[in-house]
Image (cartoon, rainbow, N blue to C red; front, side, top):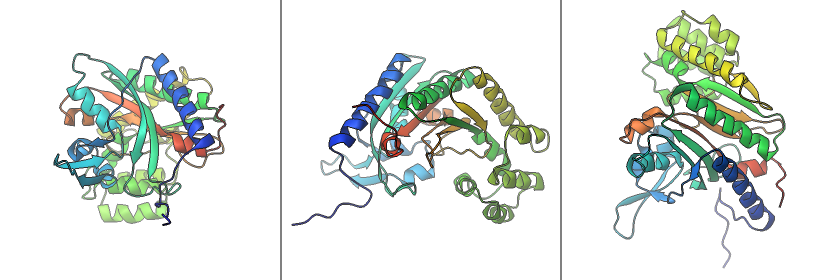
Length: 322
């Protein structure tokens, strides 16, 4: 009997398996040296844990099934960060600051457009209890070091702030996840259609068009000061100050402010970022602040982090010493 391969899933063996393990240990050693302790959550989780404070997109990518051992509904994790939030909110209450790392497989309900894969080997860090720029800079520095250590050419961190989009569309009847999806297309024509449907103020519509056209850099952001609302100005000021501090912290990695940078999942509440490198046509990592998720899990503490997919890093063509 011949078994056809499942779409979006594949086996790994030989050089590919060894390369993943070597890259995994290289990054985990980096995280450990920076003071991050490894956590190994289970592959399965209660669906409500994975969905708490995580946004609609993550819920749509989570596979849920009935447990044959009568434990009720279980879910295959599609992201590890909600599990880390659960652990921090229930198991690690004795520490006001937590620095945690992880590396494990996750499964998506549907293939991502990047290469049609449903399986990822998510690896990352979560910095909890460190508020504001101090925590953001610590995590972004580690993200930059990860790309450099893996051997990517001319890595770049693109920085944004989810508060900018929230400030622009707060009065719209259209949901935030739809605005995020439309902005991610980077199409001014598509954005113009959404703006008309959303019945936004003229200044907000103009800002969204500029963001979709890739024009929302640091100079553009400062030119909007006082023209939209206080929430927009606060997010813009935080972001420009953060860029200024990071320029003094990072070597070997370029920084680029882009107000259109959006998080991979909509549980973020502050500064967000994505990592890119020369010759790689997709984002290598995503990260940002997610204070609201921790509050939703019952422990109101600041939190920020980033994650990456080891399979995607290997597919990018980097050479891993075996």
